[in-house]
Image (cartoon, rainbow, N blue to C red):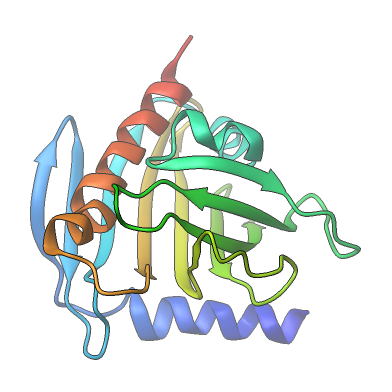
Length: 201
């Protein structure tokens, strides 16, 4: 398990997020959205930077409240924990169905979730697509290439710096306006809802 986590950390920190081709494409409500094109990938990668008026543990609590992802995560119509012998408080598997505009087939994905709590009070979370665990359902297009991360750094007891990263391939031949849902629109709306939920008194 330790070797696997190290490989994932190297993948994220060395191969993906370190690329220096980020372009600021949207800045609104204190949220900055960056994208970058990656060779041999159909979709641009996304990075979002913002601050949330809530402590790190409050944000983690929301991220790990799997059944309620449908209330704030853009396009998520179903979200549930997958029972597994390796599940624990910081590492588990969950399943999501993503609503797509008609006539495009809805997507589903099996997610391997891992949280690392660091000694400086920050938290790093990564989610990556996992093969198996849930049989393929022909009603959906299975997403097999998916990687996201949250880097949560406390600014003080009640404020957190958030950096969100997303790299995904929804599969299929999609028109540009739907692809846009997976880049600027969807991730931005997700961050807006996450901030609202975390900052709610």
